[in-house]
Image (cartoon, rainbow, N blue to C red; front, side, top):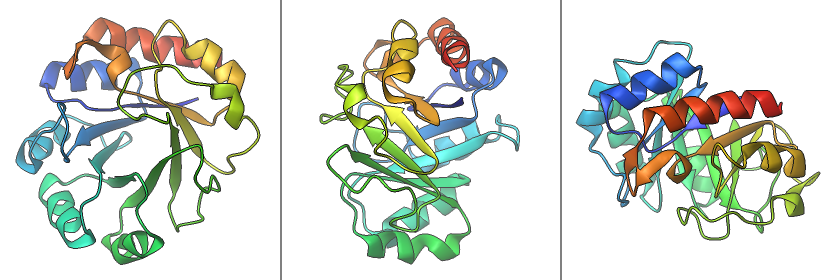
Length: 197
């Protein structure tokens, strides 16, 4: 089970995610309570070993803005959240970064349909932290795809059983307040996700 912990902004939480065995760590570089600037993402990224994917998360920015921020942040992957056109992914292909497309379940759920490397299927209201009908996507996404939206240590096993994803992605479910992560919740989420697999 591939596990991504998203929206990290503090060194201790990055370290907790790495030590817990997370496969990917997301830094939000777009409008959000979890937003950090690319320079801070670069500093946090230096705490992450090479086998863990660092992801810069964007939503609605044009490819030139994404490119500049991703290069400054030094992230190894770029995630475009929402209905970005295929052309945005094409424009970023030459960056040599892993490309991640994050959409709700009404979008094209074939991983690679937009030349992305990884797909995230998120809740109808991304960032709400509310569980949704995970079973509704079972069997629909193809390729390497992660389930997101309303996941927490308490329900990730249920979500995995319902949707059968390749991986899972969490943000608010490992927080004690909006944008405030908790190391114990991060460790618990990774452990529960792996147990569910």
